[in-house]
Length: 115
Image 1 (cartoon, rainbow, N blue to C red):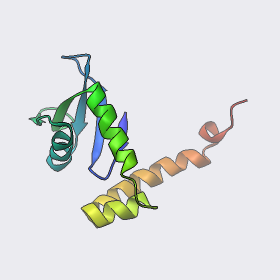
Image 2 (cartoon, rainbow, N blue to C red; image 1 turned 45 degrees about the horizontal axis):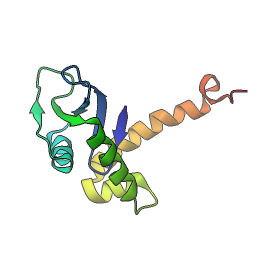
Image 3 (cartoon, rainbow, N blue to C red; image 1 turned 135 degrees about the vertical axis):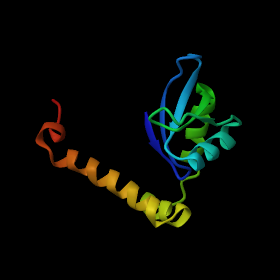
Image 4 (cartoon, one colour; image 1 turned 180 degrees about the horizontal axis):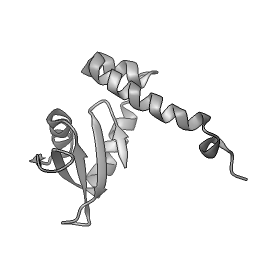
């Protein structure tokens, strides 16, 4: 699961160590720290892996984190709010992801309605 919140970008997968937890992988240490603070966990630095920072999060805590993120929505444009809180550079990166995903909308293979 990929998730972008105002705290950061996260890739959550089942933990290989503890199936009751998720390994939430992060591209930046700051994103990992914000998540770790929010869920009361610690950050693991994994420079030899594709994501350099990871947080082992109980599934229930991840669900609560996502619920809290939804409840905190008080903006009408996510990219603009990211820019206001984390800067234009981060907002630009998110904008590139948004644009890449926009292409799915216009690709007939993906945009057809299922019957």
